[in-house]
Image 1 (cartoon, rainbow, N blue to C red):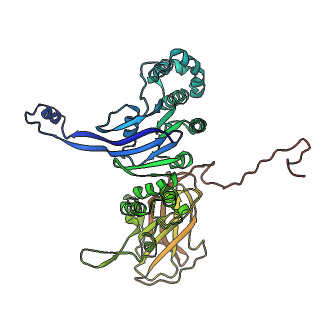
Image 2: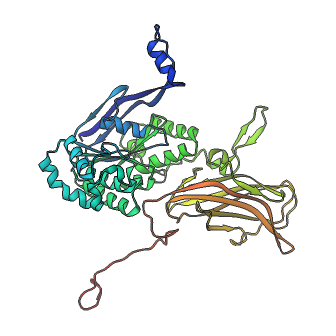
Length: 472
């Protein structure tokens, strides 16, 4: 298969100066003394994109995603390395790139078309489609500096998508538009994808990555981590988000050690852990049972804590009378990985570890999931679920797990948990943690409202006689 883009050993180094005067001192120093330190935005990056592929680049902020797109489009030059592009490129980078803010929308359309190599007559033929897609009305005759961010991205995307590019490059730009325009853009991208256009996209929307990408490239702090199909790369990305670099390196090492060949390539080519049937969570399983342990500097055995591998809210609110202590907590995805990132539709487990500092007759363990506004969305407890906890004594420890299916829509949520009880008819809080963990749900299909009813849809044509087609 012919490649549309080849990136070979690309490095991008920026010089960072502590003070503005240091730049001048360095340029004038007779012995060429350096006053800067080097920052590697990209470090020896190599990958290729085949013609007709839709490829996503993912990674945390500062990974170099936007930098490599700018180098591919020619906005930036690499410090070293080489980029080869085979085909006409239409790029939608950060808001404002390639537009003259004093020109009107119409003038920017023709100016950008000229920069892409189109004649005025060719742009005349495309103008109606561009304006129809942008749908910004008479504002197209106003200077773009008067546009809202939503209008700006409408015009920019309409231009990028309607010049029939061989390669379309998109960098997070669609996050600015409203949900209806985003849906319109993705439908159009799917259309040109079916026609064989190569698409290279950077986004933090893992739902789009899972739905559209044939291949995904994972970066971290300017370094290439791995490439493969979307499911597997999202699994690895979740480890980076949860700061599980040791687990990530172990998994990559296992994959590198596999024997080459069709079977091995199929396994490492990006299938999800679940599809591969392997045990990528091997290191996590003992921790769920509370058996894994470390030794502290004094040589004493100390149990590992799940929360140390998750993103825990440092500003959480907690209170209680102190007779119980939730000293550890974790969230496990469907493959047994500790993570703050869950896929919509998968089974996941919330785990709490509680230590008691006094006898309690009937403790109740709870969890609640809220939205960012603080609205309770769902939750349960051991009393609701009919799980009776026998009386506990001072020094007892319990691990309680809640396993369920994630049906919330894609988005950001907050997890709270507590240990409570009833004494002489009064509700007592022994320990409560508000908003202790964040949860990010990734979805490639959101419905209306807070959660998905998981509807099964069936549509059949009704004949003129009033009966279902195919049914007698």
